[in-house]
Image (cartoon, rainbow, N blue to C red; front, side, top):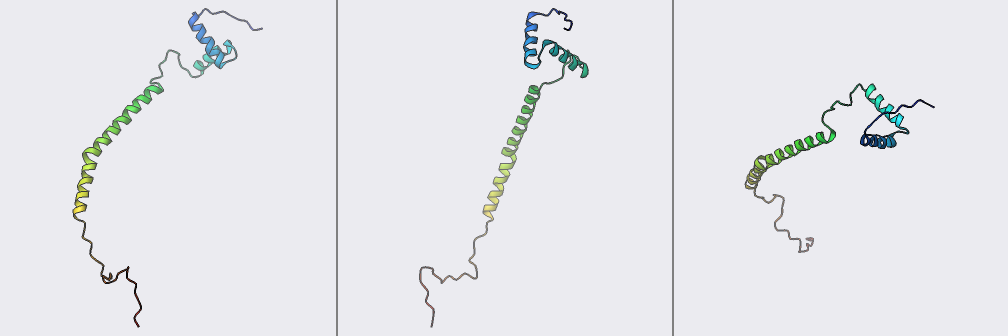
Length: 118
């Protein structure tokens, strides 16, 4: 049997550790060794701040995207739609009148049957 040493930890912290240990490791010793290895191999301190979390980054991206959408909507309202409206008015006025085709026979009627001339 391996040697065991007791460590005094506040009850609330010990309960959190036990819950974490049960979900991720087989024994509490494995859990503690895994956490110590993590900090040692990654050369980080548990007191370090890693910067913004994923939620903070997501919220800032959403704000940026909403700002871009607002700019695009304003651009549509103030520039694109008025310009398109003016172009449509110009095209409607400049539309040429339909002229009958030269090959078109105005004497031909589809409802009267034609008989061959002999």
